[in-house]
Image 1 (cartoon, one colour):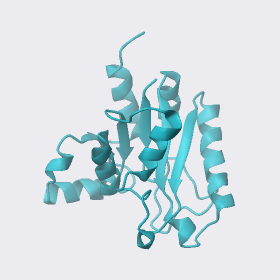
Image 2 (cartoon, rainbow, N blue to C red):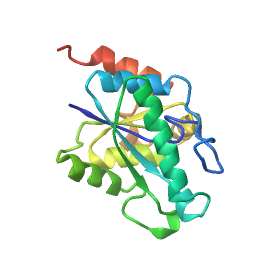
Image 3 (cartoon, rainbow, N blue to C red):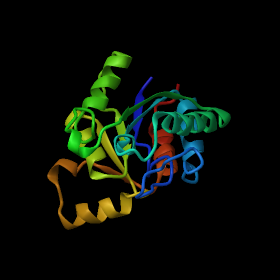
Length: 187
């Protein structure tokens, strides 16, 4: 079963420059829940890897984060899918931790938890740190245009980074799911 790593804010749910602070503010991007369910039903393990500096900055607490994740899990389950795991970094940039993307600590933890290598797994994100983390771990980076994706794309076009030259570009998670399902070997 292939693992697919997904960033959260801007990929699955609407991005907020002020941090998504509650389950009520956690609003899925159109088509993202169904896309996750389709990928799960096709046998992919969906693992979320998300920076959540709002915890360190005091914008929300752990109960709020757990409520957001419970809502996300419930929506995916109601659509017939499953999220295998959620990994998050609770630190701010100033903490200089190992787990804040673009560092690979979250992916290291995923590898340890699932006792597998993430090399060649897809990693879907909307920001440069997501893509850099993917490349650093040997994953296949995918940039979606949702969330901060359009801004990220504009930055890459202005200042191309050879490390990101293999990045797949998708309009959203739904297009990515369709791509994966079309190119997955049939059982």
